[in-house]
Image 1 (cartoon, one colour):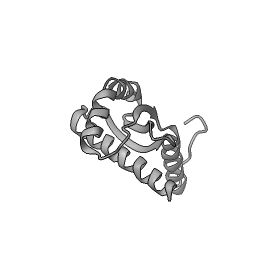
Image 2 (cartoon, one colour):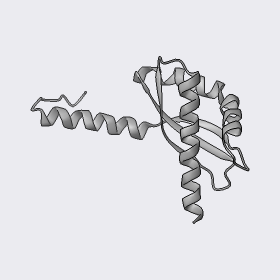
Image 3 (tube, rainbow, N blue to C red):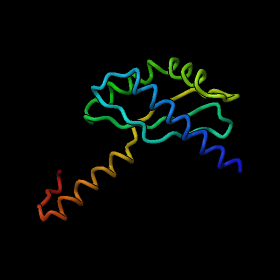
Length: 118
């Protein structure tokens, strides 16, 4: 039962952070929250994200780190949680690699040759 609550809280926090980003961030780069992890004591949360274009990940990370306090205040205002976590942010490289694999699979299915350096 506890792990179910744990995953629901993590999902809820990810949605709240995504809403904050949608309202406050510039659309260049486009920042997408892919998932959220929360510590067992609910005191720390890691928000994973991707950006479009890929080259702007550093800009997005700087914005998120700079806005960490505002994000925490937003979550405190919107959520009815006893413990409001401190947020850290990380690029979701797993999602980035999955997208690359999908692109390569589409190229192969389309009969195009791909170079190993691509």
